[in-house]
Length: 202
Ligand code: HEC
Ligand code: HEC
Image (tube, rainbow, N blue to C red; front, side, top):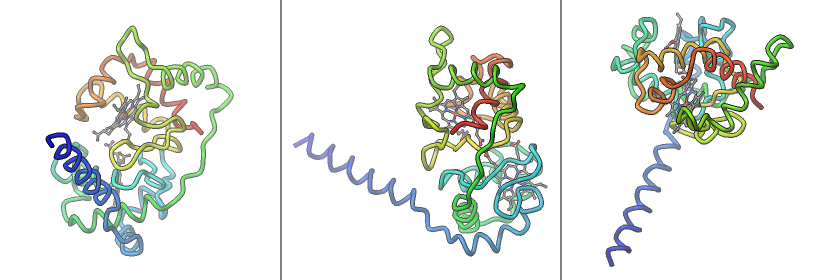
């Protein structure tokens, strides 16, 4: 009986979560609201400058979640704090639906960086057991596409942005109960190799 109750709870939770993943954002409404974002993130979420992250093709749900974190100040960034103050929850869902439905073209590693990428690949796929660093692919996927809604897509992203975020997790500037302890145990050199690899992962 107890077991049956547990299973029922589990199934209702699973249905509830699936509902939350299919957020009720409207991509067309999101596109209309995204004009103000385009200057930095590009019309379709493919930004032209490495300090502004690519939003195109991000896992559904992640963009809305991060916008809420910027608005509440959990994730600290002066520009994005300003950008989110006037956004409602529905705006965030719509923007999420628009950008996550766009495509991000694959990137390639430059010849000079092949060796770095090779070192990054080993860490990404196997982690570092001596340093208790888990394999990144466990949460971000073997091809870096992420898992909706919580585990972000990394492939196609600017490598300098990935590096900056890992350094921000490492020194606690960007708070994350999951990524904080992982990045803390990585050296700046390891972070560099991972960023180069993940950006062009396919
Ligand atoms: C003036 C430039 C600028 C504008 C305009 C802007 N952003 Fe940003 N955005 C940034 C920068 C810079 C970052 C990186 C912040 C950081 O380092 O934490 C960022 C980060 C983000 C992130 C986090 C991405 C990730 O992978 O973690 C999201 C989501 C986002 N912006 C969405 C938007 C949306 C939606 C709009 C329009 C309502 C917008 N931004 C407008 C510059 C901008
Ligand atoms: C247990 C699951 C898990 C593992 C393992 C994991 N990550 Fe993450 N990662 C996350 C979550 C969750 C977030 C979102 C953080 C947040 O919302 O604060 C994230 C965010 C990130 C981001 C920021 C992306 C963005 O667009 O803002 C990068 C970069 C990253 N992870 C790299 C890595 C690397 C490199 C490894 C391996 C050394 C790794 N992750 C291992 C769960 C994980």
